[in-house]
Length: 251
Image (cartoon, rainbow, N blue to C red; front, side, top):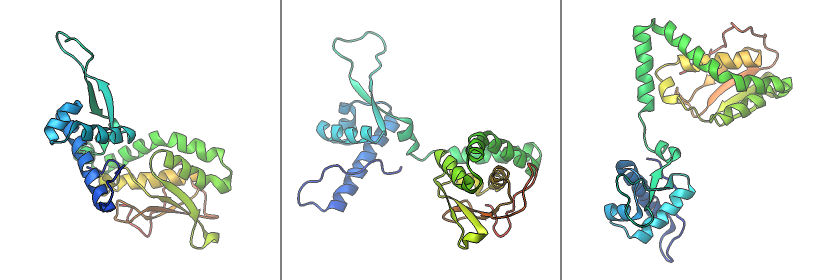
């Protein structure tokens, strides 16, 4: 699991880094216990983890602030006892996503099944293009609303809104064009096995920007950033034109 939160207070005289690491480790244990056992009270967590209730509350406060867990009223089945229901803490969607999931494996298995049962690589290409087409609406609106010289920036901003952490900047030789850089790829692990996903995305960039583009690097291929070169004064493309991926295996 990813570390969920930072240390909020450290006793005097203790090494800062050591204490911070210990805080994160204990906080992860609290979140993991909720994942394994479901919504839990402070007393439940204290008993399972061997912590004081005060310590558990402190870690829960931090986890709530980081949107990893959320307090809820405990559901009571059958006859309700007297008094207010105990408060329980449950993982949020964000908190659940912080743990390793099997989504990549499931997606890869599904694509492998499509290739084997529904037409080989052509079926994968069709799927990849259909998938990217459903995402393209907001990107197209952003690009069409921008001035021609600002379209790469507009596309980067729209991609960032979808979690790609994208930027646009001048190429090393500015007169040659721009580079669109995606610092995060949500499907990198799957695209490593199925380059059709990267190829369809590159085609979409070409169509949206109205020019041939060239994919220089991809996270799926082991590069640190997905980089697409957008040349100046390049031939215009049609909707059916393919983007260039020369110089780099897209995945």
